[in-house]
Length: 546
Image 1 (cartoon, rainbow, N blue to C red):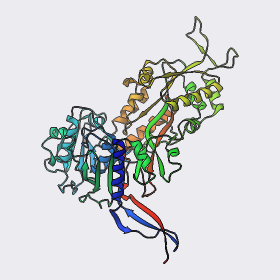
Image 2: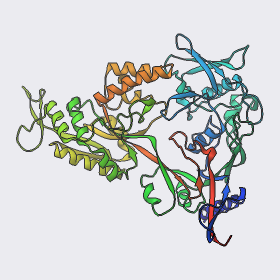
Image 3: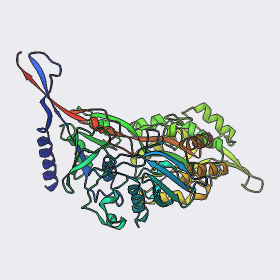
Image 4: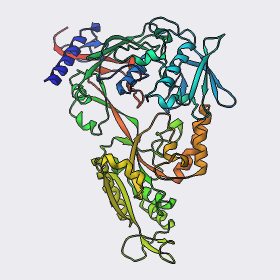
């Protein structure tokens, strides 16, 4: 009953907000003198959120807090659509010769949402707050290599950040929210603020209404450096996100992001607009390099050529994904894209298998390979491959069966090993398989040494000295040009070596109510990008003459 009452309250609030509209009844939208549509344009955008612990970006791990704070706060840098760092609060910057420090020249003339000027003391204070918090937070990985920050005595708009090592010093890490120093006594006071914390930023939106148990309303920041947004974003707290998806069709919610693979089928009979966008969640095949068979690059390529990724997406994953050439984000830093370098090709698969030394030695229709370590003088062994899968994920189970069928056509016997979800990571680490189907949501900085570097205990026991060097250089890159140059080499090597074969990157859906007008350009790290132009247009037909 409480859940129904909560939903009814949300509906009531939504209907009340329609009365606060821009310009009353709008212009006639189409029709003729006998049947016309009147339009009411509302600047109130209804958005769903789940209950959060706090809006304090230092201590929060809530997803909704992360996305809402992107509307309120600015950061030193932000990431573009290719995940390259571009300056936000920074005008210019430069690194020390040894890479152990970077100096930022900040933009002058910016104001906090209470009218107080912004300067380098706010940046140094924010860094102190993030680095001294004793527990993990969303931005732990961004600041863990920072030893401190100081403000120039003669110029409060110059801040120098010092590092513990020359590793992980790139501008792509400075994407955490910058908070105002003048509102808090010290970092420890800020750490202690939970439910009572109200954000004050330099971003486009400011908090105008705040109730931790019902809603949070954002309006245009009057001190914003540019023209403030003319709409209001009303985040309604709901029992669960699934409830909001059911309310889009009746315009009770304006916009929501769905991770459900079957989202298109949910909205098929409703006038809801859905725009898919690429997530940071990859699904791949990982080859175990402790397996004698999988050490052979040609064998890995043969398996890749045998798999029809498009069929997997359409048959098992509701077509909610895009192809990708490596496990890095599609088009990362402008390199590569949404393509499969090993698109299904039976002839290529046969060729690679022959190059790997596979042969039907006993004429039973299935492949064998020569193992020099077998017996005294070596011998032919049946190529029986073990394929590890999370058995709790039905989509992956069905995909694994399709892959098994594809390998069977190639003459490879493939045993499916299903493991419970809570035991899957341990099974991967144990290594009793030839290849496995895995997935992960990667951090936006894409430091994937834990997946690929030989010194990071990667899960497939892959080792390549040149790749190790490139991965370290990539993490220590001081410029976006150097970062892209190094990644181009990483991309080429991974495409050829294929330690992981990316099946696809999942897509999410940005669903807009029939009333929603405006361009939605969401990304996995910014659901509400370009929301300043959103409006609701409510129409109703009426009959009448001139």
